[in-house]
Image (cartoon, rainbow, N blue to C red):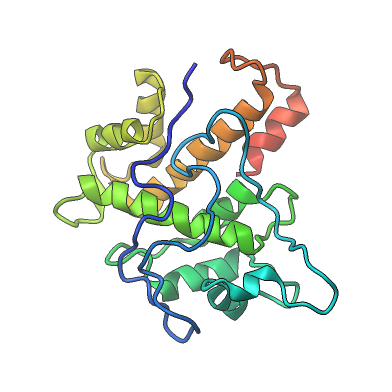
Length: 234
């Protein structure tokens, strides 16, 4: 059973207007540097899952490898004293970076589920590797959204949302698609903020399912608490 495929052009999709105000480093509009892990638009490829850790290996007294990464400056500009980013810090960063372009900024709840998508240790925060993967994902999702929002109204129609989900490689039933539209539409249209929230949940839930579907049969058995954990985390 096919759960989902890589988003076209991912990872490393060029962004739009990604230069943050008051943050160090070069423009964020170019391709994301380094290895971004598995495709973020759908499920990870067969055979493994990309690491989501925030720690860095290295010898005592040596700078972490991330210090040489062009995105390290952006991360350290918003990270708290614990070296991680919470939802409020992420919201501030995404607003300053201009990642949404002419679209409305992400609300705090969307930022929380962005962190939940990659928060494997359930700290409610994200480390540097997670931060990079999130920006790669947002660039891809934005490009996909813009393919259908050709009038730049900041929203798409339900049938375009269906096409966008299919373009990301997901194979879900019409009934499920209709449920998604009902959940995320406002006045019959889906806005960018809600579109991203939908993409995050699709990706995270598919990821959780595939980790348990070790035989790749398209079916798994959930314990009640495990099911609640998977769904409530995002």
